[in-house]
Length: 68
Image (cartoon, rainbow, N blue to C red; front, side, top):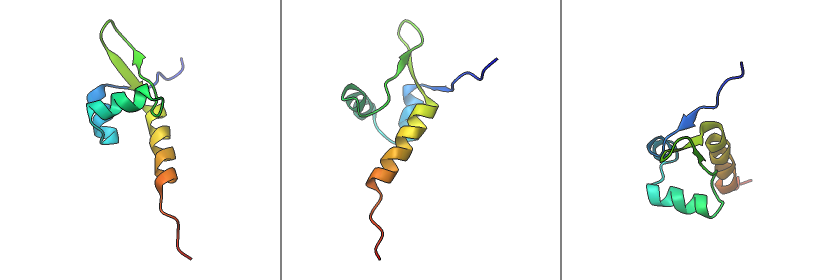
């Protein structure tokens, strides 16, 4: 059986990304952040792997240019 993706709640996403609830939903709506998936009638979660990839791409995009 394949490993199930690790799903994070909004609070866990806040802790991982250091973003607030409003920023998370604003970025998601704009398509600038991975979209959550619905896991119940009222519950949504994010795939940890997608968020980690997204964070890695953001850190390389905003990394300062090396001086040389």
